[in-house]
Length: 70
Image 1 (spheres, helix red, strand yellow):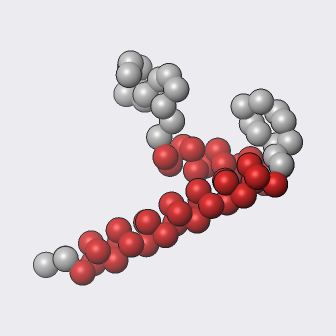
Image 2 (cartoon, one colour):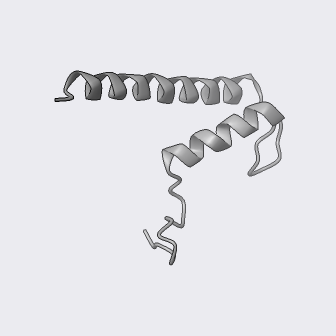
């Protein structure tokens, strides 16, 4: 992947944090920000599940770090 001068990845890869931010905005708007199409039940459910999964993994990572903190 090519990197710009500000070290952001360009191309098809989108970092998970930016993807989560975009999905949150799309759920609030009710439309896909890239295509402008309205979200149907399936795509909205996928975005909700993605955000819940990120939240769960973040909590697990924090708990593990707290457990092994010396």
